[in-house]
Image 1 (tube, rainbow, N blue to C red):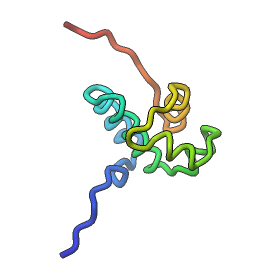
Image 2 (cartoon, helix red, strand yellow):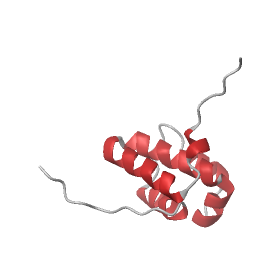
Image 3 (spheres, one colour):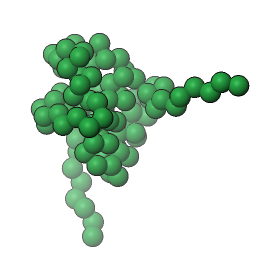
Amino acid sequence: METSKFDIADYLDSNEMIAEYLNAVLEEGDDNEIVTALGHVAKAIGMTKIAEETGMSRPSLYKALSEGAKPQFSTIMKVLKAVGGQIHINPLTS
């Protein structure tokens, strides 16, 4: 029996799932995990579509959202907007 490699992008099939996934990573992940998660979401939606909406080329987008990449904050914001997300700040409770 052959097994296929797990790909989270296969399960990011609704705005709600995408938002839940990104919120979980934002809450618990480090900056590398957040960039990687954005890459998974962009892949699930379609890199061509995200590239068009951000004004970036597909190769630049792949590079910016690859594991270990350090994209500029403006790139993160463009991609978030293109995937239908936004950053919302809540006060931390101690």
